[in-house]
Image 1: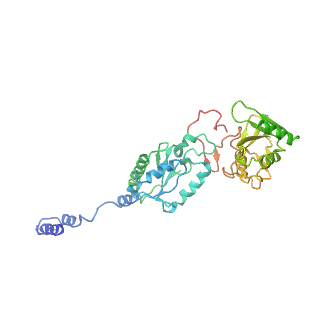
Image 2: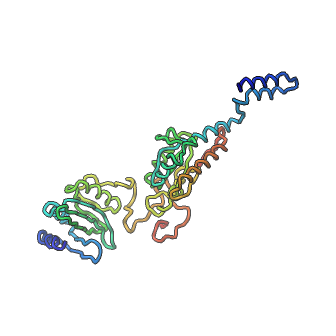
Image 3: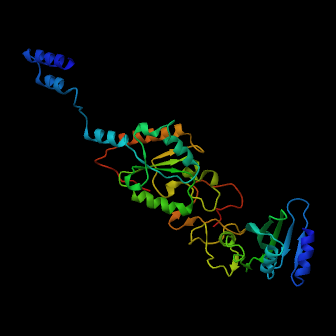
Length: 185
Length: 167
């Protein structure tokens, strides 16, 4: 019924002599077509499907699991975990990184396809945190791979990590994907 | 434990076996390095201290130590043995032939203290990477600032004394 009404109104418009052609076209297409720029539509898709690597190095990983769980539910932002770095857009460094692990994380990061993003989760990954004085602890993951978003906390609550993801989404949406700047370590 | 100590002295007259009686904490027996393996073997077989609870390393001002905690299920008693090793050449016989699980404890003590366990079939680092330099729980150990191609210097100076920052 609604469809028929719509066609009738369109025909009414056609009968009017002074109606602008473009307006008519807009009426025809308004239900199905979205006008936007290429960057925006690409970024919309990328920002809402940030798949993250199923990877954690210490106790922050427990909070990461909670964030992926039903209560905080990272899935509603289109972010789901993948078990291989080759399918991931995002790696969340959750926990203390030792020097032994740092080179492994570098390998994982290198295996991810571009464009790729990094969230540093918790004090340990940000700067060494509680274990800063340890002989084997890396003092911040940004010494090894470039970081997009730092989430403070020890550990951060699931809400904080969700906020971190939203900030990252905002960053992705503002990128010019077709002319991407090079990241530097 | 004092009776055990007298028994050990009777059984091993050549070995130096001293008993440390502490006001607090567990008492322990300090054993001669050369006779360690035979004493522990005697404790396991004849005295029925069948369980090796823990094998660890320690360092005090003069010596490195290898510490053995044994437990007897039949008599419900524990005994702590210590071996004192010189810091420049810390070598002691392995007890992995009595408890194969001890090989892993010994690898850890080697990793963190640099204690060499003779006749160990596979004495290499267990937790730190293989190209790590030094043994971190030694008192004179200085934390590395550079590891492989990672510069691990902290961004802000640290006020805590005796840690890192000295090159």
